[in-house]
Length: 188
Image (spheres, rainbow, N blue to C red):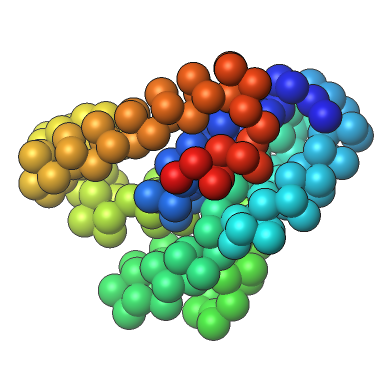
């Protein structure tokens, strides 16, 4: 196992691993073909716990990948909401009852567009009002800033972000003390 990859998985995805956030995304550099095997390994291991791991974008020039870690049922629930579907259709996504098809379209956008598609926030579990607020305000006029810029209740956002930080700190401390990733899932 690639200890560097495991550390990134825990550090960047603890809230998803703990079940308090539907998804996380992180960039991992290096590892070449071995990293694909690593992602497949973690997808198999974490699938038993309702978590999927997949490469959503590859950058051969920089030998880096974007890894999407998500709770499929939760993301499917988000994507099935009528307001979210309408928003994604306005952004050019073809309607689908399949989470995988939406992810394929997101992956295509990540690979083809110059700018990072802001609707990625939907796939990470950001509230729709925050995604729309960010787009409409071009990243300005936010009410709170933490893991993302929020455009709703700042107290609610700070509370959510505090929970994410506490989770990350707890998971990282346990991981650095030698607790394997799978056992971290049981610690929650």
